[in-house]
Image 1: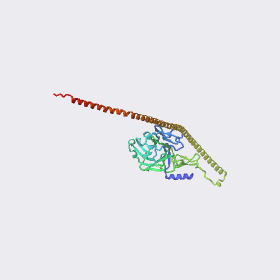
Image 2: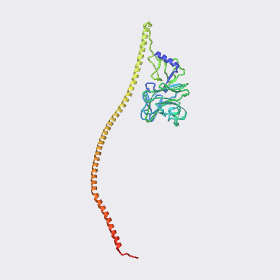
Image 3: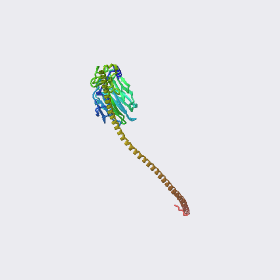
Image 4: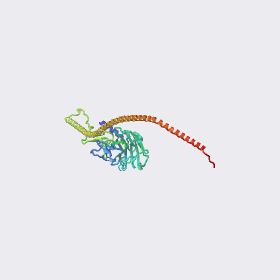
Length: 444
């Protein structure tokens, strides 16, 4: 462990020491709010129509359902450091065609001027914003935008063309949190994603007095954005390892590396716990007593003092172990409660699935009845068709025979009547002419 502390100290000579700015950070401990309240210390939450949901280790800006939600968290105090690093751990989950976007702001009076707006709906703002979304139908992209307070983004149709930097970033449905790291100092501004460089610029210098904030918006088919950690670190321009002899951190900042002394006067080292950028904690196992040769103890008093010191050190270590076990036991109980709640919700969903099974059985019965009705209707139609065909054929044959039987005599009589009437007219005309020719002629 002493070798590790030495390596940390040598590495810190080359890099500037970093201090946690607790007033601008959350998520670096086991719980976001140590008191168990539904608030984020030093941050305010906004949302439309609902405020974000706060759990023990994360804040849900947009829920998995319903869609068209907006949520935001804003730091109450502005950033007053010129050289700083910010780590943001978030996760995005959603259906295959889900969509939404996450905005990381560093803006002046962001809670009042921006709120839960996105880069496409915000008006005039002063500061920086990083946008994470599926731009252009891609798997994911992160882009950077700047504004000096004169440009109204809500009235621009070419907002996408105003980005000063971008990189591809597949962030959806990874099953783990993704990390975005922002670095700013007097030389350059840099954005890293999951440990790799996204983009950087030496022409961007952000003044102090801006507020950190995160806002998210979901579409009708929503993505759920969850934020686990926002850790802001300030840099020491001297570049020395902060410790008790050299320099104490100012204000409410905590050193991330170095040494200190406990109340017993024993030297202890500070080390990082968990992911990079989390709060520095004291290592209780670094005060190991070095081994000594047996011949160095020439008196019973020296032997007793050495035994007393080692027993005391062993007692301290055991106490630290018991405290750690108790702490992890509390975390395990809390996780157990959360899992129990989730299991209860799943049981409720399973009861609904049972209802679906009954509906499925009813649909199957309805299908069988429809098939039976179809078969019966087909048989009835065929029977009716045969009956109609039989009756029509029988009547047609009877009618045809009756017509053949009675139609011929009727036509003969008609023909005879016509011919007889013509003969009678011809005879009458002949007699008329003959009588006229045999009568006396008259002269005028």
